[in-house]
Amino acid sequence: MSADRKFFVGGNWKMNGTIESGKKLVETIKSAKLDSNVEVVVAPPALHLLPVQEALKGTQIQVAGQNAYHQVSGAFTGEVSVSQLQDANIPWVIIGHSERRTLFGETDANVAEKTKAALKHDISVILCVGETLEQREKNESINVVVRQLDAVKKEVDDWTKIVIAYEPVWAIGTGKVATPEQAEEVHAAIYDWAVKNLGQGATDKLRVIYGGSVAGKNCKELASKPSILGFLVGGASLKPEFVDIINSKL
Ligand SMILES: O=C[C@H](O)COP(=O)(O)O
Image 1 (tube, rainbow, N blue to C red):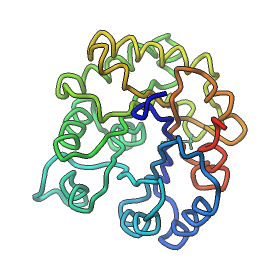
Image 2 (spheres, rainbow, N blue to C red):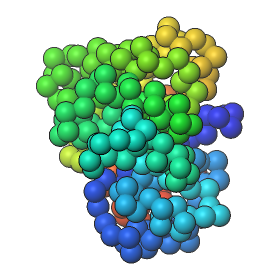
Image 3 (cartoon, protein in one colour):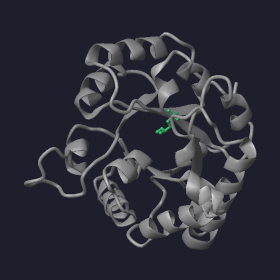
């Protein structure tokens, strides 16, 4: 596998922990032997980004914001801007996570403008897409994901700094992991979409990763599937088993 298609493991800590617990988690990860062929990115809460980044110095692990606002600055109380992430040397940001979409009302258009703004500020994007249970039961999974990707494509031409995370909403935090077949079906549809919309060159470099109840016990089987090029991990990224997930290709 070429360097720009390294297996990718993201840990989304969501709104959990303290500065101290974040540092402890970093120590656990640092003291383990990690597969050096894996790109690892952890997303602590915004307030913990800098201390966690400091604690990770000298390792292969980078940090990501969990969200960012597309405006550079201004009267947007409570928001962190893409340019503030850039100023703090934060190399990655998660955009369009389903919790942002469902709990905070982010639309496809919001996700598109945030993605565009992050890339403009030289921040790589973990772009989350995925269907709800109701949409899956109506056989709409692929349509939903394609609609979410199309919205971003309207604003963004260069996808070389985007990792697409397929996260079925029904699998997030529920313990109901998608079967490898379910994940592979949607990943294949995403690669098809990419061939049609981004061109072969971009597709060769594109990584589609899976998120939703990934754990130490299921990561190896998922990672063995050729279309699954990594994971976005929530709950298990706060536990020592995150190391097993990073090493799932070994
Ligand atoms: O961003 C991560 C996803 O929301 C997955 O969360 P989970 O691993 O706790 O299901």
